[in-house]
Figure 1: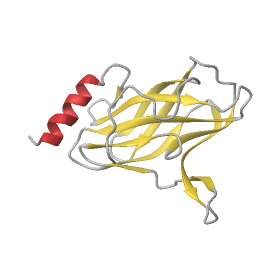
Figure 2 (figure 1 turned 90 degrees about the horizontal axis):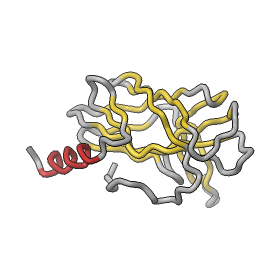
Figure 3 (figure 1 turned 45 degrees about the horizontal axis):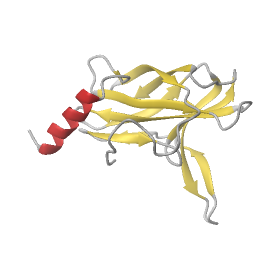
Figure 4 (figure 1 turned 60 degrees about the vertical axis):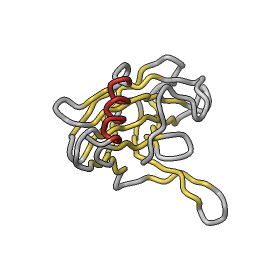
Length: 159
């Protein structure tokens, strides 16, 4: 077993509290949270670490939730004039074998557009993540309006 595998397994074992896994699959979701920018926002976003404990790459290809009219996978890209804008990533996000992918503020994330209700600190948002190989994983994402960028209860992993 490689050092990377041992470290990955150790982090996974410590991370089980608050994490969601696909039954029989090798995908684990850790440190998930959602937020809105203002109380009456019509959009919001969710962030998390997606860990692939398997030996084959996977792909997050969709996300669904009844909390909003549309749910999309988004990222931030420079528009060429130095301005950052959010764009829909139709192909989704690669989750490397024995690796992880961060959905984080200023980068890749799940976007909720046309919220059906306001999101308050402490609310729980049900979301279904759809993976190319692992299938669907239903998770609960707590709304955390107090977390600052870069805060989290986990180690950082490279993509």
